[in-house]
Length: 277
Image (cartoon, rainbow, N blue to C red):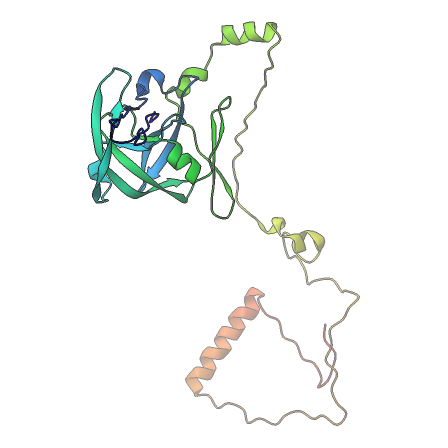
């Protein structure tokens, strides 16, 4: 937690006093899910990293173990700071990465990260980054909300280490219910999908007589009849019959006779201009 500040110059008779900045490097496995620690998952170039949200730090940091994978040039800071971890070890930090793209739910939030020689957390985001992106913290619920330039709220997904810790045995569940705890019974049914059929079509459902399962006869007569009215004086169009070779004519007659025998077609003759339905 970068709490240290550089003392102002009080004149030639006073020397400049610097208090080392403090960095909270909690152990990820032991304290990462503790009630007083807020963590989250961020993406950098589609790679997820564990991030510690530290409101007591004036700067933001990135561990040295992942800096080689960032692909961002490192810059030197002539006004480096001295950081102190909980074990009392101090180190001088003067290298940082500018505009590192931190991705949360598809939205990019830039961060200036100083290279940290500790490796308990991948990143530590301090007040410089929290203020820049107008971060709202709900410490009780461990909820971190970021705001975009369009004033849209983005919620950070919290990092949890033990997902199976919420599972309880049947005996413990029975005891909790007896004590008055709420319990919910969930029922899951798996149904086999038989695929779609003609009966699923809305139009087919409305006209079952038009779309029967079988076609034993011609469609029934309907109130609305379709007819083509001819103009008075209309005569048949005179078209010269198509001349066929004798072999082609024999083949055509054979095909027509076969269709007639199978019942696919039937002979029909209508006078010119007669109505058909």
